[in-house]
Amino acid sequence: MTRRGRTAELGTVLTELLAERERPITGAHQVKAARSLRRPRTTALPPLDETALRLYSHALKNGMLREADLADLSGGHATAALRTAFAQLCELGLLKEHDGRLGTYLPVDPRLVEARLGGEWRATAGHLLEQAARLSELLPPFGREFRELAEGGGHDGDELVYLTDEDLIRAAVREAVEQSTDEVLTAQPVGPRPAGVLEEVHEHTIALLERKVDVRMLYQHAARHDPQLRSYFADLKAHGAQVRTLDHFCERLIVVDRSTAFLPADARHNTAMLIRSRPLVRFVAEVFEHNWNRAKVFDGTHNPKAAALVSDWLKETIVRCLIEGESDSAIAKRIGLSPRSYATHVAKLKATYDAQSRFQLGYRLGLAMAADRSNGDAAEGASRPSDPRHTAAT
Image 1 (cartoon, rainbow, N blue to C red):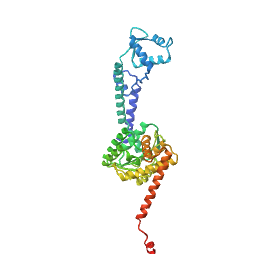
Image 2 (cartoon, one colour):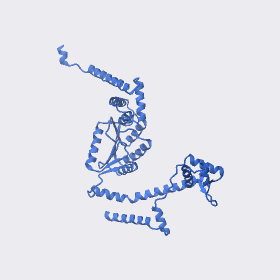
Image 3 (cartoon, helix red, strand yellow):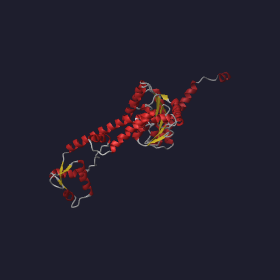
Image 4 (cartoon, rainbow, N blue to C red):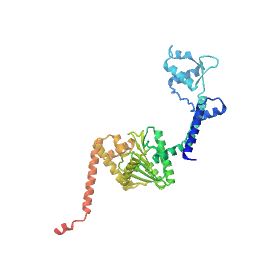
């Protein structure tokens, strides 16, 4: 079957499924089809507060709760808060109307409510997972059709796409990375990430390396001080990944097979730009290569000499930022540390240099580094061979 024929057939299948969704439910077959596609209704958990607890407690103590009790509990007039709490208890099922007495409600064991709603919501979750699985089976042929037309010049749009939802960003990155065949370049300049994110990235990276995809990763020097990241990098290197660190990098980026790139679209990294334009992707890749060439190899092990160089760089950066009047949060971001780690680092520096303020710390760090440079220049001069001409003249 031709590509156009496969697309037409899939389009027909989707049309029939959507038609089943809208068709009145009159038969067993239609009921089954409608249930398979209809979005299940979910009950939002109402925000129960102290007022709701007081009403429920009153119902327990008296064996029931009458609507007239709402006015009695508030001094003759049912307040909006009491009416809202009453409605929430009824909606959740903690109060059930008495079958034989209108306007009277009986308290329900919370364990029964939890069992009923928990079962319904778990069933809903299973249904949504089933729908997601069906979607992943139906849409890939359309994705292949889209990519084939785009690569062949039949599709001239979507070279720049703004992704404004974090889940959408993760899904787009995951799809691009999973389909990679050659290389994945990543830069993470803002330091360590949460453990859950790190575990997910580790799993995907190992899968790439097992498929013989080249993986190169850039971090800031501050990553060398993080024990968790050191272990993470050591494991990835053992599987074939390459990791380097550098002093400062422009921004976070991902490049996949030199054909797709991702860049942050705002300072908070809540939105991203998906780039498919070949010239722009090539430019982003060249920026990565330039920084890769000046970065230092990092295998995850603790190297005292390299650590000393990184510590010197951190000190110099902190001094420069303090002199320029940058805030603590801005300095932490620049050197790739979390605000808490940066505060700890600064506290240690203050103790080492007996500084009481940020200004005093910057001043004393500057003096110390100037002295170190002076001593280093003197030592280099003493070890340099004397000029033969000068010796002969004397």
